Amino acid sequence: MHLSENEGIEGNTFVVTGGLGFVGSALCLELVRRGARQVRPFDLRLTSSWSHKLTTHGVQCIQGDLTYKRDVEKALRGVDCVFHLASFGMSGKEMLQFGRIDEVNINGTCHILEACIEFGIKRLVYVSTYNVVFGGKEIVNGNEALPYFPIDDHVDPYGSSKSIAEQLVLKYNGSPLKKNNGKRLYTCAIRPAAIYGPGEERHFPRIMSFAKLGLLPFIIGDANVKTDWVYVDNLVLALILASMGLLDDIPMTGGRPVAAGQPYFISDGSPINSFEFLRPLLRSLDYDLPTASLTVPHALILGKIFQAIYTLLYPWLNRWWLPQPFILPAEVYKVGVTHYFSFLKAKQELGYVPMVTPREGMAATISYWQDRKRKMLDGPTIYAWLFCVIGMGTLFCAAYLPDTGPVPLFRAISLFVFRSMWMTRTVFLLATTAHICEAIYAWRLAKRVDPVNARGWFWQTFALGFLSLRFLLKREKNKS
Image (cartoon, rainbow, N blue to C red; front, side, top):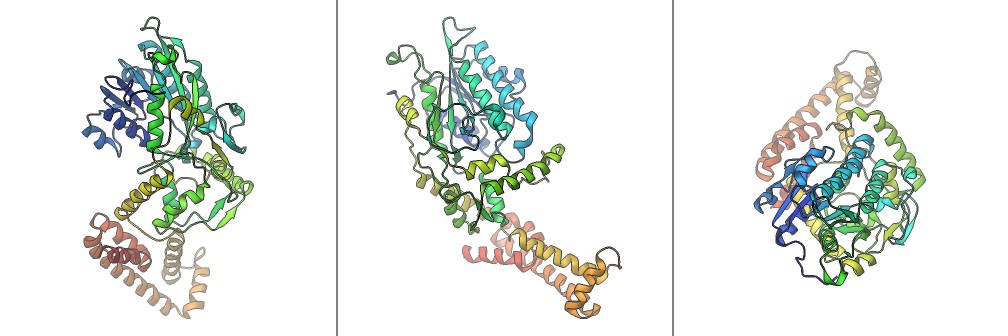
């Protein structure tokens, strides 16, 4: 296509489902920049990290739930084009909430389609996923001619639900509209690679939390495994171009939109091993890089163990205190099996070419995470926590508790090391005093170096002593 930069955008009204998310907010801002008359982010949340920026650009969120038809109809009334980004169950604990996944990804998409027909909306761009054709079998430079992966063979409900939803969206293409005589609904599907960029909220925070705790001990799969990534600005560009590709009033198309009924793979065009891709980011944050490797079959066993444990914990999956699972089977395939795709079709039909290179995108991502880390409470790995907490707890039990349960064993170990109860109690009191003094010093130092997290530094140093304090001292040195 050879259209103007703002073709089909200027003067039009748009709805972006999931509009307060990472990609959704970036898309909303780009639509505003290109002259959209009105942009409506439709989201289950009322606020997010991007709410303030959206508000300053005159964008007001419509709060609602995709699974409620009334909410969808309220948001879509009087709209020219819909970008359907909202989904559920992409990663972590969400992947195991089967009922909610189908409600949002399938039923919610049906509500969007029905509202488009009811209110005469002519364009719908659906954000799908690579998983509609990938299910654990190697794909090298795949294209849109690949068949859908069998629904019953998907290892997670997210992939199967997105596949069903995409097929529904493309099947609705060309459906006549109720309130627009002679007009039709035109749809297309964008299948993005793994998305990254400053502020990405699904994968990177989880990866960084594991790295901070030292819980990234191994690489999954062979070093030559490659997958695709896409920078957020490149994906937003593809979505904009897709909406233009659904216009039915472009003379050169003869009234048949070039993108109508079509799926498109979108990426940066630089497939790379996922762990190699993350290496510069982890190194820039002083986190340990994985050295050992784990084969895909062994990783799948680990993933199935976590899946079984978290399935038993199903009633509490939404609770804040339940941490994210280390890895699940579908995630093993994502990082451990080669699957990357060509964006040639998007280039030929939509004019898509990545505007941000992987090097530029990673540089921006690193800058964001370095700034974020400076504002966060830093600390040692989980192994230091276990060593210190278990050590102090064991010493306390040996010094002061009566001979019940495992206490005699703890006392025997302490007596072997310290030779007497008097020495055991003296060591515990001295260690506790040192922790208290270090915690007070950390609090006073943090008041100057990191005042926002001063209370956190106090309690962490109280628990860990110098194992925590050294991170604050390092921050003071870097700041000076």
